[in-house]
Amino acid sequence: MLRIEPGPGQESVWDYPRPPRVVPDSRLVRITFGGEVIAETVRSMRVLETSQAPAFYLPPEDVDLDLLRPSDHRQTFCEWKGIASYVDIVTNAGVSVAAGWTYPEPTPPFRMIAGWFAFYCGRVGDATVGGVEVNANDGDFYGGWITPEVVGPFKGGAGTSGW
Image (cartoon, rainbow, N blue to C red; front, side, top):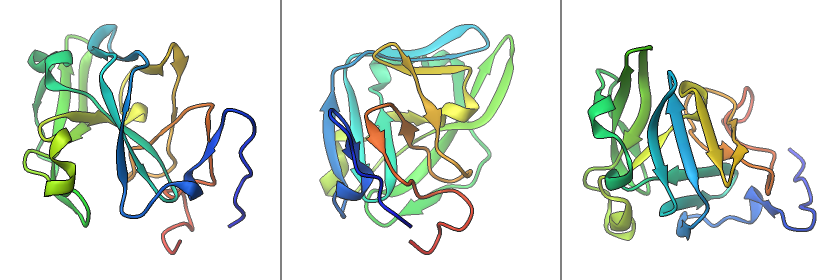
């Protein structure tokens, strides 16, 4: 693994802390699926963790909760945040299974994202930050969003589990 040196206006995920840090982000975050707006906010929180693309958490007030349902996907455990529960997106266009997740009762350092939602950009129609389309993190576990200001390499793809 070779760290990519960030250019002007960029940040390296290898400079992110462990344990992770939560930082507010005021750029417009917009998520659609099947032509319907799932979420739109300028009040997201980014979770920054060493080697991982940031995950964007959105307040439930800015998510169309009528388009979400609890998923049959098993809960997962994060050593930092606690137990995550998953949600499916359901629209007239179809269903995206386990498209997002939430921490209903996160550990104390992450209480500010309790009940907030994060989404896999590869499981929604479109995800944008500040009007720029987001790229999905490789693999099917990490839900980080790769935006132009973030460089890796990113944990999640084949052969990265030992990083």
